[in-house]
Image (cartoon, rainbow, N blue to C red; front, side, top):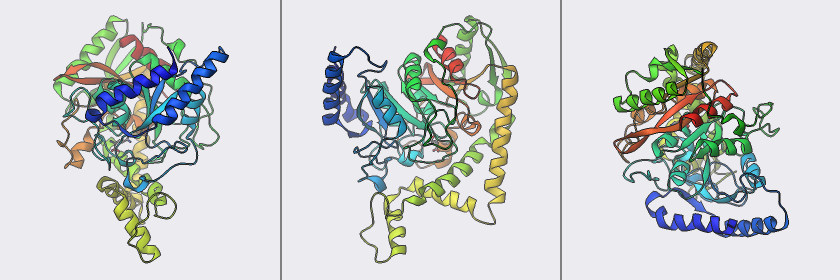
Length: 454
Ligand code: GLN
């Protein structure tokens, strides 16, 4: 088997299904075929290859790729060709993968359905009337539809785990700081993390191995030794202590989804684990806390899009202030504007203490909830999302309902800890995800549990 054949299969599959799935914003076929040919040549002349050698991959369109258009699914960046690679992209190139293209998302990663893409929504491969989730919906759909072997996504409040759950694949949000954010277009810098979307847990371990590690170019990068994640996949979870938060299994959860989680817990019991109900008492404040903090950080991060430095510039302006104003009015979509306004308000003097500061304090309480449970338990398990995927258009006029889809993923993001979503069955012929949450930097245990279960 040649890399050229793998890449060819990838584009053939794209030709077959992409008109229905619409996972990609940009394809990079010419370069991908060139890279494939080079890798095939290298293989002929040397025997050493990486574990990911020659595999066709996709990258969410908020990670910069040198010379390859990076839009964040925004009109604002429709013409943006980065002059450097994100650290994760550099690492995957070093691992001899082949980039097939850039994947659709909610604009600037704000959303949970892909309907906030300024270009087009992506569709759930299991039923194309349904959303693939988001914001990494293109990444999840492309993997689920077999267009690429695996993809990178980013997760700020659930954007890797929720689309993985909706599309029936594996999505891992690493501990904050484990994977470099250098070259990831910032949404909420204290929450953003890059992670793998893959067909199975083993692939997730391989991909995490390739992208994790300290990077001096990211000031929040963790200086830690990276364990061998593959050796964690032992299948042995005897004696594992699982906490199941009652807040994730109570009101708001679809009873059929709850049933699937309880069935999964039985499987884990059968493998020798034990579980008990636990409480994360501040969970009810997580969504409000998240939308204050994430929007505040977004309003600050997105100030750089001024029509001067990046992307498109309004043709209609006659002076500098108009240029800022019009470029931003024309360039950003409605959800992005909503968040910028929310965040600017929360950060403004007079409201800062009541909103932003208060939210930071509640964030600490949420983190302490997890610390307390982890004193007695190895792992926390619950659903990834309260329901399976919903229909395209069903929630798009109702931002608050949309925000509640992340009720079980957001607390983990606020605490900075890792979590993986692994498929645990179907409800109404749509996939459901089991969320396995771990201690900070304990991805190995997450992967071990998810692998034993799958
Ligand atoms: N759906 C959440 C939001 O809209 C999470 C997004 C994300 O994780 N990037 O903010």
